[in-house]
Length: 114
Length: 113
Image (tube, rainbow over all chains, first blue to last red; front, top):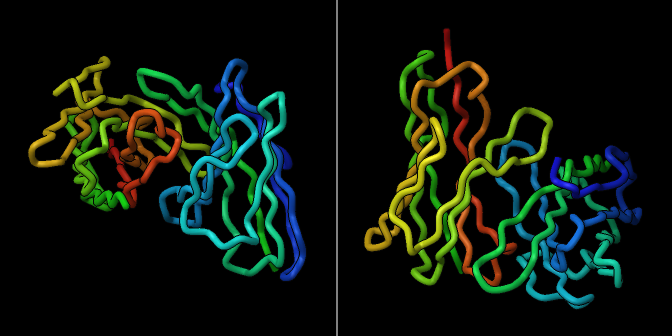
């Protein structure tokens, strides 16, 4: 167990809809990042949140957005869903600071867009 | 940006044999290199990591080596067991931004009896 929890675990949405995924980070961790893992591929970095602000973004369009709350939990929002958004969405938490930051993944949210 | 290449894409070994997976990275500023094991339908699990101030790290049957000059690092699994069968991913990042991992494309390891 990593202490990182995500919800929902599975969901099905229709193309054009919007989805919100949620993540609770491991206790004491102040940084949350989100990854998209399409079937058969490695995880792709979407963005990272530190102290409630976006702190780095991968190659994803603006319809992917997020929030981090004062308790360090986080949301990933995706608007105008496309079929290619079907993937496993992974939340990862870490403690940003000197010495490097081991990250731990949650179980993920499986999103299917039909 | 960083680019991580991983080889081989599939690897089949007999139980008890060793397995080696290799990765190369492009950004010389990268200094943190974790390895993840992912079983079917599950999250990636960190199995070992190495930082650039160390050339080798070992944890029981698993070891990782790093060659900063050549910008490549490798995962070594000795005395493989059927439960080692999974997809393995290497990744690279820069300390301080370590949650911004760039992953390799994965290696599907199959350990046969």
